[in-house]
Image 1 (tube, helix red, strand yellow):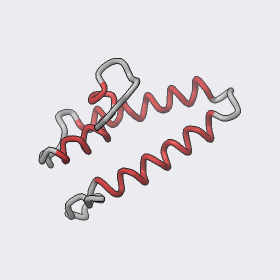
Image 2 (cartoon, helix red, strand yellow; image 1 turned 180 degrees about the vertical axis):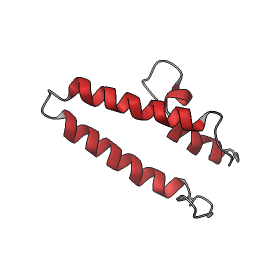
Image 3 (tube, helix red, strand yellow; image 1 turned 30 degrees about the vertical axis):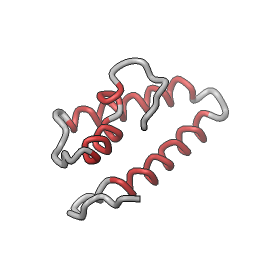
Length: 89
């Protein structure tokens, strides 16, 4: 079960989640326009940080979010050049 409060093209806006979802259903190849999707995601995070940097808690929130995302993804996606299948936890 996956839930979100995001309105809009969820899979396009979240390529990391899209890769996880596709691997769950057996698709292990690259996403169409994968490089562009990840660059756009990074740009959105930069824009978010620039917009909310004046708020005292925003940098800590962003750092915490990115740290947690890496923790989740390292358990699901194989590491670069690893060649190993994702772990099932």
